[in-house]
Length: 218
Image 1 (tube, one colour):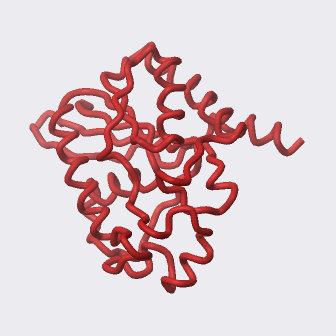
Image 2: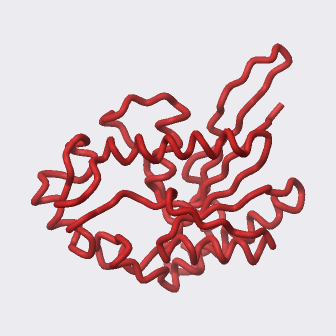
Image 3: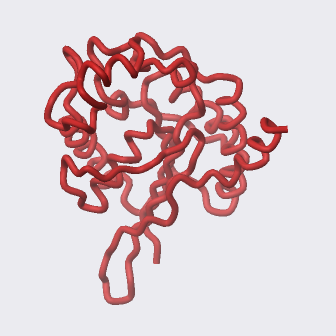
């Protein structure tokens, strides 16, 4: 039997993604037209799912691209959205607004490359961010036990969930691809013996975007 279910939707393509900029709170200007189209497709898919088995809560982080993603889903599902600052991505400090290529060159790699070192003045460390965000994810899971919870999320939030629920050691060199507009689903199973186990039902599912990609290519 499935009890708690967590469904993560990565935000659609944002302008900072297209421009190759570190999209912190000073720089994020929201979704591109393509990003809006991606989220509209995922919202249509979730509407059908919500009709059969309703979601109980919808969360979004504070950055514009997340709030825009969450608002589209909220309107489509007629489900109120809760914005929580603790679902924001890493703190980028002085890197906010700079080209990612420059930041990675100066830091000798991206945030994951040296997980216990800041990648810019005033930034998080990767391990520090994952630990902080993981603590909040654990709180949310306890708060919503037995419910279906939907997230308009950063790709980093999906990685945090995987790190927590798979028990991946901090600083692991392994990673996950998380595409714009993708769906990732975790399910908490309870079997007839009373044993509980988190199961990754799907990761980076972009089936709903296939037609959109074909249209763009034609």
